[in-house]
Length: 460
Ligand SMILES: [Ca+2]
Image (cartoon, rainbow, N blue to C red; front, top):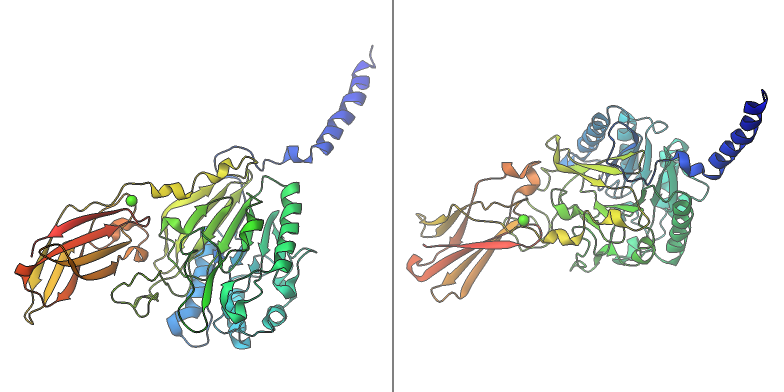
């Protein structure tokens, strides 16, 4: 009898150890249903795009890069693990510009402690031989590539890195240098499919970050922007990525290229995977809405008063929390986004879908007025509309008394300047030119990000 506990132990201990071995995943909490746990974070990273280093002081590009890195480090409490850069590290891919990027990075971080994982943007690949795919790694040095795995093809821009157990992948299109719609090509897609299949089979409950400079088509804000009108048509999105990405619901894409503001809630979009815009560190752009007071069709006159990016955390359950960083104003934009840990049934993809478009329309409440100026022109003034989120833009219509439209002015609202939409300006005014006040009527329309709108009439 006295030997019985030993006998039981001899049987149970190996069984227990064997079951632990067979269910290696049993010690991992990834993929469990659990609220985001700020006390158990396993991965802290910045996600930046369009840093556009340039030797001249244009847009304060060098200072903006350093400020962004320092603010990311502060957000992490000095524990940043990685910086993920979604392309356009430089303006024109010269040695000096890469040197400036590298020096600024080294001013803030040791790449052995804080990994830099970057994909190439169109500005990084401006020659048709893609020589920079080889010269970038040479200029950065091997200490910048310590987390690349055996299946990384660094000289082709297709990389697989692991940082604190989190997988980060970069992909390189085949046609950045020749313009047109961004095409990844069979070689890259086959490589991506193989890597994603392997790592998601082994660790289905972990998010996987995929860096692609151009957006996957028809996902987040700007990802359906049409080709430019110039001779060298610049493509803004990649369609051929979708067939691969849609197979892996763990994927979180990080993209740039557009420079669109992260204040807009469409900057995160979940379809069969999750897509994120990363904004731009150096300057902002917007869709061509024929807006007033622009420098070009898609760039505002105040585009340089802007610098944004993302701060990302993953917890032990595989939940991902994202803070939108306003580096220019030194703050975080609105509420954090939280992507639940990946589930086989895709239930984690129901938080930030296109159905968010179904939300309250803006409202006008304070009215407006029309004033005659000394030079005979008229100025329309109106109080800002309110919304459950923010007003994206306004249109002012000048109509005749029968309601026929004579002229239309589009005004981009100032939402991109503020971390809190409550700080947006309270009124707008626009000079509509010379009209007989008695012969016209004015209609103002306010729109939110999703195209929900309201209108009010102003009697001249
Ligand atoms: Ca709304």
